[in-house]
Length: 244
Image (cartoon, rainbow, N blue to C red; front, top):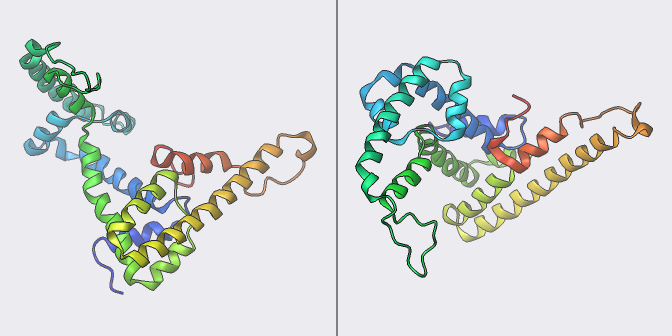
């Protein structure tokens, strides 16, 4: 099968020796999005208009700070703060005016200022840039499963998925595959998940046993990084791939 634009990174992710190839896809996109955001693009007016409006989530503002371009980050934070201050000033008169109905949750932002702040909290320029492509990568994964026997073998021989991404692909398979394919796909990835969670669980058990004096002279086998690998299985992209 001739690889198309999105099949290449999906195949590359499944070629990696990692605990979740979907995490590998996300991490690759994340690195690219961070490089783009802190590159020359932050001086372009059209990009700056968007970053001023939506800002960044906690995860990505911390990652940008770690990358060292403090001036670029400071410039974006300053103009984003300018816009935020102006918006809050406009909405300040409405603060506390929203009413909560009898059957409305108190956390629902009826107050225009609270709603604005909630929208700001939920928005991130880097996340948006990642997710616009990440969704296409997930769709491509199902396209390859349907049409490419080589990819099917890669999937079968993979180390499975983290909790978050197993959930995502199980939810998505019902709309991307016909009924029989979706059922077969769900059974396959669930079996792969269980087998590989048991593998990492067993490595973790041996890691624990190694702290018993009776096993202090025994080899570590594959257990030295078992806690990190289990964290990746359980916490998805929010824990960095220890093999990178």
